[in-house]
Image (cartoon, rainbow, N blue to C red; front, top):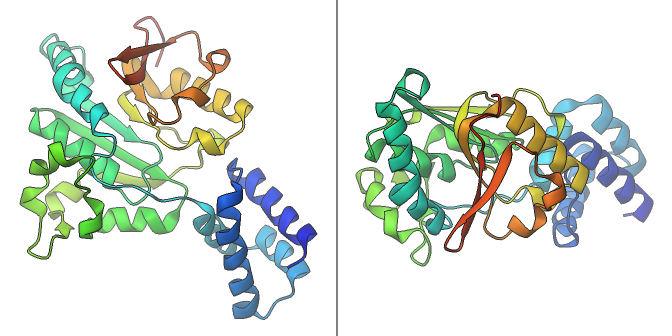
Length: 278
């Protein structure tokens, strides 16, 4: 495949999604492109025009370009912090009627196949919260998997997340896979959101998980997304978690003034100051 063709398609991908593919991911994208050229019987130079004119084809390219590594209760130290300190403090606010309609609003902003939002939902419900959960991603294929609510045994890891596997037991099958009841699936709204477009962000959220995303965006895109989240999505006092591996990519210069960086032990997170508007 011609280098110029690859570069043009990758530039279009970045323009459409904000995603800057790492070198390790480019091989998978190139393999997808070569397969599509054969399937469609199309020349390389004509495929670029197809991407511009056919949104469904662009969706296929986007789906091939996103990284979807996830599992239940990933980075369990964050969930420990939620269980032991943050959720109890929010519960006190519930008693004071500070949560709108006594509902805890949770947004998994890069949900992939859904293990993250189900983990957050199960933990919140186990602690007595009425919840309103949103799971978003740019990958349409992963969103559909989340809506189905069925996961293989590989969605649970023994090394990480095992402290909370007791919450998965009611949904665990004999073969080790997981299948959530309809009553649980219906509690989660799965929707496609392109974070780089800064549109359709859920509002007044008490907890947002935006993990393993910023490493694929350039600095100015990270800044715009954080500003949008603070201005529109986080409720006053609300919490934002990024991956523990990417906290270093959140440069202090791009953190909005109403978003305070905090840490508890080895866990870093952000909290919107009470004075900030939702």
